[in-house]
Image 1: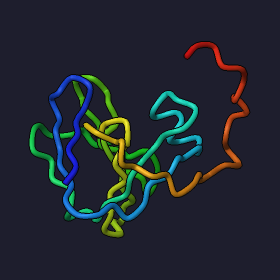
Image 2 (image 1 turned 90 degrees about the horizontal axis):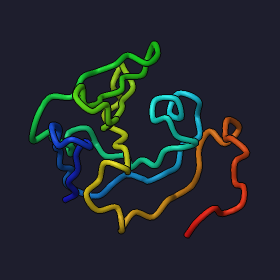
Image 3 (image 1 turned 90 degrees about the vertical axis):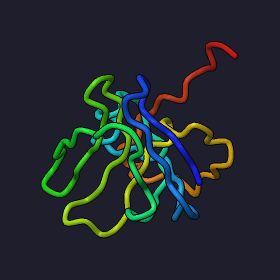
Image 4 (image 1 turned 60 degrees about the horizontal axis):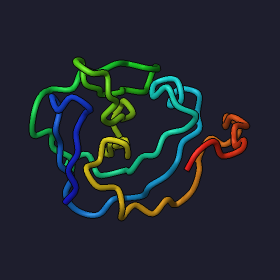
Length: 122
């Protein structure tokens, strides 16, 4: 089982069983929603994920996309497609412990920003 939550602690969740996959997404929607050059996520069957504290706010980010986030601090928690195909895409940054996550690959790389640049600090 994995656990996680938003930055302020108002939303908490758990997911049981094995993740379907882990990836880094470079699509414009994910980048804008996260305010980051890419996002890490892990996919679970929808019935494996349970919100244990609070109620995420839902934003219809596109005709089919639904993004669930904390209305207090703004942390993105997970997203899903509507009509629902039966899975949720949980944001890796909200996991309490992501040390066991093994990234399967990168998606939407045509949208990736060319920002590798030099390393600025350790």
